[in-house]
Image 1 (spheres, rainbow, N blue to C red):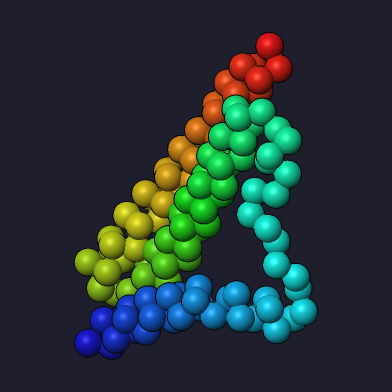
Image 2 (image 1 turned 45 degrees about the horizontal axis):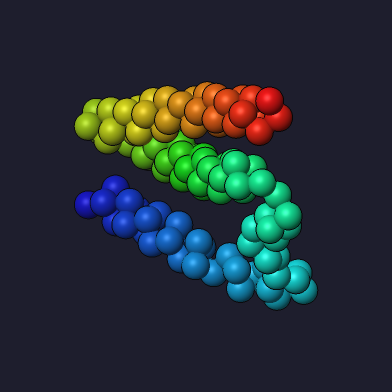
Length: 118
């Protein structure tokens, strides 16, 4: 009962923090960044590389969030084998996903740099 309540609280907290992050940044006086600024003067393949890198970065952030969630589930299992196993699997799959994201970023950038500057 307590674990499921903590699980819901953690999920709602992560979602709320993602929605409130732009407000916090705006409160600090930071200016807006124009997305994909400067891509009008670059070739199409380089613009595609920038877009792919943005999506890979977002995927890496999601994987890092799942590493944190899996760690919290594992730490707060309190002897519950099912909860501990759930945390271990979440950690394992998130780390594997992070490695896959890093490798795909390296491959995509290598291939596009080879095409763009050939």
